[in-house]
Image (cartoon, rainbow, N blue to C red):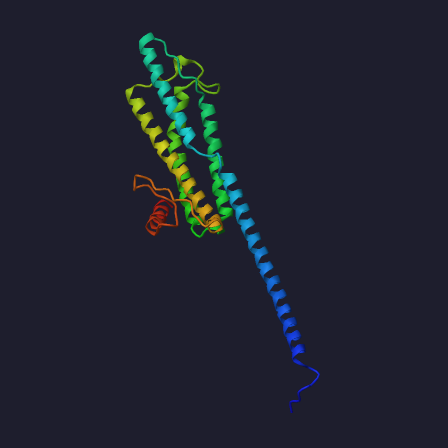
Length: 249
């Protein structure tokens, strides 16, 4: 049978309630503090991860190599024009070995980027797909480079190749047309690679930092709608990426 203890008055009850409220408040504050620390750690990890990825993606682009090939082409044209005027052929001062080394350096950097992306694929759900698309373009870049590396040693003087200008191939009109087509093809693929790298960087940035800064970096929107953009923001484009990977795998 319940028996009311007269020694416990309302003042005591109020004190007990206050004590319980204080305990609950302390536990709530501790829980909130742990959540705050956990969220802070997560944000720091996201920023750190983004910095690691972008650091390895910086300053690597094949577009510069493509521009060099255009410069070489123009120099060859000028050399042939001067030969027709003076009778003496002076080849452009470009070393095919140095050009090849430049491409190899860029190519190695691009493949390292692909490897880095694989390491951090977990940061965005479609990153594995985008990495596959990038690798396909890197292979296309190598294929587009092959005709150029095969012909340049016959057009330019090099220490390990032809050292006598008279033994060089002086390009005729058809040679120039073929060379221009090959350079344009390389430039097109190089632009695609650079564009894919940009797309992947935007994807990672929005995935890791979008919620943190409450905004997203705009996705690339090429004027030519036939170009593929690596993005999770457009379902139709995402399907085009999947189709591109499937067709080229």
